[in-house]
Length: 271
Image (cartoon, rainbow, N blue to C red; front, side):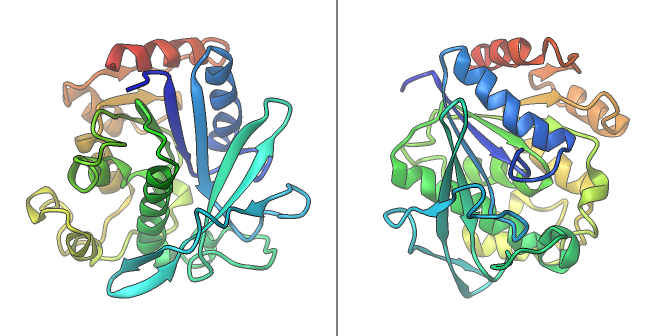
C-alpha cells in the first residue's frame, strides 16, 4: 500500500464554513501535509449554510446514488466536490436532505436539530467510507477532526477492517475543545443502531441504552483509534488523561507554527 495517502475527515473546513479552530485546521493541515509530498483527500458534511454556487460545488454522479440504511430507513447518499485554491486540493461533501438542509440557512443543522446528530454522524462516517471505497483510494492514515467524525474509528475497526481499501489503515483522532458544539447527547438508541450496522455488541457496552454525551463519544473514539493528538491547548484534561492512559501513541499539544511538521512525523511513526 502507498504510505503517502492521508484521508482527512473533518467537521468543518474553511472557507466553506466560518473560522473556528477545527475549520482552520481542516483548511491548513491538509494543504501543509500535501506540500510535504503526501497525497490527501478531505471530506466534510454538506451543511445547508454552504453556498454551492459561490464555492463551486458540483455533484459527482458516479459516486452518488447509493442508499445507506440507518435504523431500517433508506437514506440516499449524494456526493459533491469542490477544489480549494490555490492548492488545487479536492474537498468532498457528504449530503442527504434528511440530515442536511437543501437551502441556505444560518445555523448548522447539528445545532438546529441536535436530536438527529446520532444518525447524522453515522450517515456522515459511513458515507465518507463508502465513497472512499468507490474511489478505490486506500489511505494509510485517516485523521478525524470533530465529534461528528468520532464514530469513524469503531466503524473502521469492526465493519471495514477486512476491506482491502482500509485493511492496513491507521486511524488518528484529534482532541479539541469543542464540547459546546454537540448541543445535546446522542440518542440512547445509538448502540442499537450501530449493532444493526454490524458492530458487535461487546464493543458498545459502555454506551448501550444510554444517552451518549461528548465525553462518552470521545472515549469511544480513543478506544478504537491507533493514535491520538491533542490539538487544542485547552482540550478537556480528563480526555487528555484518558488518551495518555490508553497506552496508544499520543502527541501532546503543539504550537501552531510547529504542528504540521509534528503531525507529519506522527503519521510516519504509525506506519
